[in-house]
Length: 380
Ligand code: GDP
Ligand code: MN
Image 1: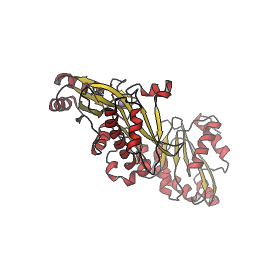
Image 2: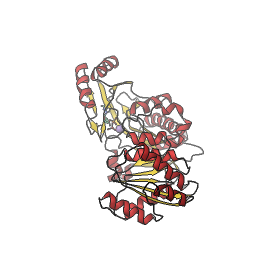
Image 3: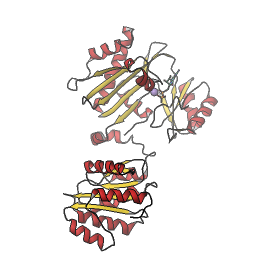
Image 4: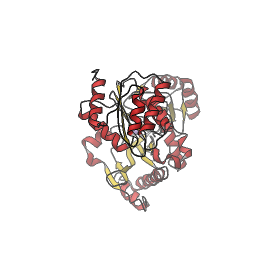
């Protein structure tokens, strides 16, 4: 789950990370009113779940009320990386002396927290990571001790020559580490962490991603969810506890078990098809799950065929078959459905399906090939 900048800043501020004061506005008039309260100049910033807002015209300075309203109007009309801007953050502008990058993420290779720092902070950090990776300092933290004060100072000294400033920035880094750790975040980033002309150190931008699997430990953070950019299918899947990831193909896949689901996607690709999604209905045998799965899949307008691949273990094939028929009673499904099932109660399942004119294969290859052909409009 991704947070907006203003939400991440709220959390950062609770940990004592200095930020420039600001307010979130949904209209140009609101933005103007907030700017008058804050004092000029102000910065107006698009609040979308995407980076690169500066380069997309989503971050603008304004020095008087009308200019604020005008620029807020322009930003609110933008779509950044496919996401419509619904809100802007209005903050007091800072006079920047230098911009540093500071980020903490979970490094899957070492299974440890990774601190990343760079003196080349600002809007070009992605490019720097690509073209001059040596300019990014990386440090693996021992999770048992966490990031210690002297380590944070040593690291900051390597990107900030001024010892006084490095110490101030190290304090921010320590706090950032605590935010990251205590929120079960997968990413916490300040880019830029600035030194202002007056010597103040501030987090000018804030980015945070939370680990969905740990959200149950943070009921206070769940309220930050903004799912207006998610498809209704993705929201439904999450609410009903199905793991669903939308992909860009046209073959809807309903599978039990994450491993089988991944193997299914591989096989679809192997036979020249493109999966529309990853969807794991899980190991339990609740027919309702099949109903939800079909609602999710049919909500995607790109789906041209539906592949159901069930390996019956704890999941009983007859329950899946019943779930499918229940779904068909409740909704209209135009896309052809191809079924592969094998394992527990497969005979019963086949009988239930045949009574309604469906056949089911036991061969995964056969089913995948048929689903690929049907998506291409070929009737087998
Ligand atoms: P991003 O492009 O989505 O990462 O958005 P940022 O919040 O990082 O803003 C992009 C750039 O706008 C920053 O790197 C700064 O150079 C500039 N910027 C943002 N806030 C201020 C400000 O208060 N004063 C000045 N002078 N520049 C700012
Ligand atoms: Mn930024």
